[in-house]
Image (cartoon, rainbow over all chains, first blue to last red; front, side, top):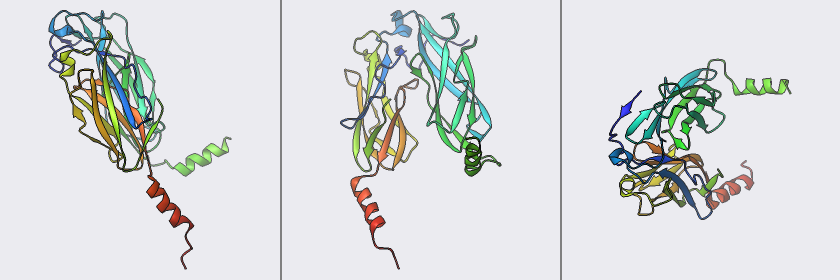
Amino acid sequence: MGVFGADARLPCGGTPRPPADSGSGLPGAVVRFALSVCACGVVAGGCVCADWVVYSVDLAADGQSVAVGGAVQAHAEVLVLVPGGLFAEPTPPASRLTVTFQAYPAGVVRVDPASARTDRNGVAESSVVGIAPGEVMVMAEVDGVYSAPLVVTVAESAGWSPWHSKRVARRHQ
Amino acid sequence: MAPSSIALGETATAEAVLVTSTGVAPDSCSLGVPLSIEAWPHGIVAVTQSTTLPDHAGVARASLSGIGVGQAWLYARHGDVLYSQPVLVSVVPSDATELGTACRTIGPPRR
């Protein structure tokens, strides 16, 4: 369990909350994002916005390249902000949080499982399985708080061929 | 999220908004942390002046330019830990590019 009384990364104690308006369209050629913060400085001194909120999600993987059909393990550590400091799960909240793993664009990897509960150390695990050659950006999300993107490269395996894949698919139709 | 598109060579504006969970404007501490807009993969959308401090309403803006045909994911970052959901942006060929392609396609065959 990690305990951080005063995190230098955000000394005023900004608190992430779920985005309210992420990804609206582009009429008028404007791309809009929304990142939510809490107005109170919990770490700096005693202001409480909620009993607890997800502060950050740190995503890491055992490797950043995988072959088609291969897999690499991904770990997402969730930090929770409470009055008095930052904690890794589950102290508090006592309940485990659900981490959702997402890959962009689709079709290059499969994340299995797509969502997982954090363990007693605040870490959720999943596998990134290569489907087709290319690069993907993998992110983990908890309660609307996203991790930094992790780029994973899928390389062709020795036996992989797009033509073979299509023939197999037709045969089963 | 709905895909958005800009033409190759044209510019668009990206806006990142800090929103508080309590419904009031972000505090001075939050507004003092730079907010940046980033694109991946590289080579499709160029983001200029991507790192700025949000204004009093929590809004930070950056300019996007379409520099390659394709699709890119854009996301906003506040400080080191707070990331937005990514937004997909497509860069499509400009009218001039399409016209040039059409002329080459319908021209007389080479002998």
